[in-house]
Amino acid sequence: MTSAPVRDPVADHLLTPQNAALLLIDYQPSQLAGVHSMDRDLLVKNAVSTVRTIKTFGVPVVHSTVNVASGQGPTLPELAGLLADDKPLDRTTVNSWEDIEFVQAVHATGRRKLILCALWTEICMAFTALDALREGYEVYPVIDAIGGTSPEAHRAGLDRVMQAGGQPISWVSLACELQQDLRQVAEQRHRCQLQDHPHPASRRTGLGARS
Image (cartoon, rainbow, N blue to C red; front, side):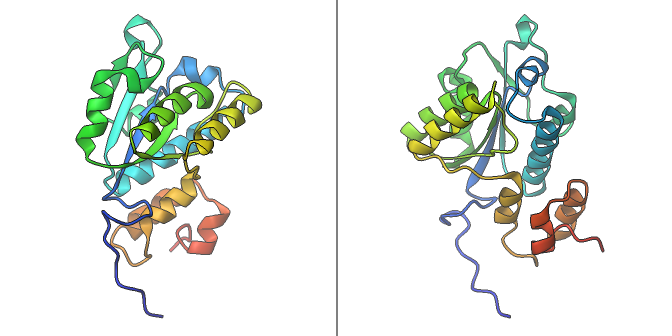
């Protein structure tokens, strides 16, 4: 089989390591404790897999927390260890897009496709996504790495963002979209990461197969 010529990774309509950035917002103990839309341990595992995928492909990260200075607690250690090079921007605003330093950091990435992980879905994810969409960004919430205060709140937050133009993805579909071609140099490193968190899609793509 012959692969088609490689498309422009910046202009591609799909997510690529060259046209996307990750916004990771409020993965803190107090926020996680309020999640009741899915199993919290699974949510954290999926968030870790998302960040590992992002790091594998060199996608820039904007990392934000809320009110750490007032005792809210820092980023979960499972994620903080992966984000040593991405200092969290602590803020007081509920909506990250109303924090000047956060928006400046997003602009500084130069990317127009924003992969979004935030707690909670209906508040910190939805408010940020809606403002980003209004400014002309494309927004991709990672639906199995975010959570709301109830299943209904999670769904309402996602629906609101989707109606405004957001495009929900899963962490596995994100990984495959960034991978693009199994011949990429990153294949081996990414396969190792997926072995730690197998998924049925991995068997179809070959990304999760053990050597």
